[in-house]
Image (cartoon, rainbow, N blue to C red; front, top):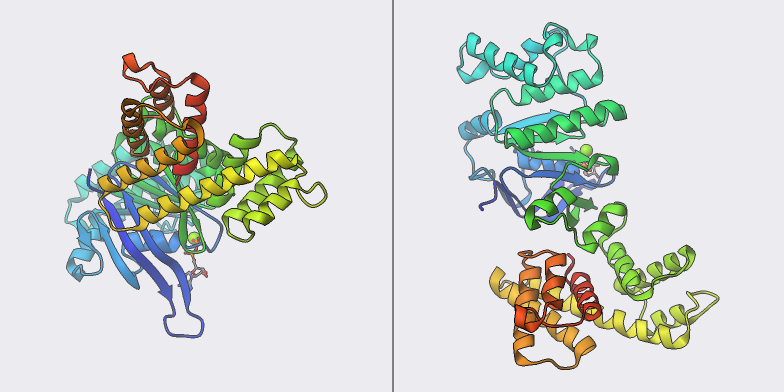
Length: 424
Ligand code: ADP
Ligand code: MG
């Protein structure tokens, strides 16, 4: 499927060349597909609004290409830009921005005033939307006489008046209590589901991300990681299966990518320890992943009972080796990801690297047939054509039944490792 929104190496800076220059977003690459519900999530000041406004054509990229609904916003003519604002993009803001002296219905009709549509038709569209959104009874009310939730529902209805393909909502529930937040988010989800609109919602609150197909975690003007939601994972694999990385990411929305990776490594290597030890080990692993400490330091910390985790020496050494190896695989894979090879070659190369790593560690040797199947299975898993569960079944199925023929425990360990080294 072709993306409806595509950003290629996009940076946006404010006050370029001045002493107060701010690089609000940096080298962002992203693709969003028709009908997706996307959330941009991150702390205040990380560049969420800037990114959203750049997609809306309200900020222009200092660098890179912004392509929305087949238009390159860098080269678009001003006439086309107006029809782009009017027909392609619907915006929703935290502060609603309804005109104070107009009724709810007139606020909605205002947005269609310049589109050459008759008053009667505009009224019809407004009535339909209000009915659908359960706000018909507020039709004649001015914003001052409505609750925040009612005002935001009106503002969303207004954004839909011209039937745009894309709805962009900047902190749409930032001013609402939790009950009204849920009503408004449910409404956005409904528009996404029933009207097939592509929705991008910005939020700094981890509680407001649950309708997303994918959550883009942002930090310091960059997208740190992209996490699929349970709902999306269900529809893409038919199994309700999330990878362990995705599950941990969701449970720990404030952790960095490396933080989640550290947690994952810790889980698959060390369970079970008490919480304090777990936390200490995670911190140490993360330091190592960030290259703040060396392999020797890692071993020392894991081994040391005073400053570190106090594991038995032998165990500390084994764990250090595995972490070190996995890290090398991760960086090899990242290298492949950032090089300019085709997606197909990329998946194949990743599969080869992962297979080699796993064979080195767990199997030693296997038959040619097994190796080939393994590599095909890993490719399919990396390309997300099969779920983690399906992959595990494939590994443990007997060779006669087209499986790889590993025993269940090895299959489980194996698939865990694949998730570990391939999680983005
Ligand atoms: P968020 O929406 O995640 O809070 P923003 O996109 O609003 O983040 O801001 C990102 C960075 O850009 C911040 O450091 C902010 O101060 C700065 N910034 C945003 N808008 C402007 C502007 N118009 N002029 C100068 N700096 C800005
Ligand atoms: Mg903002």
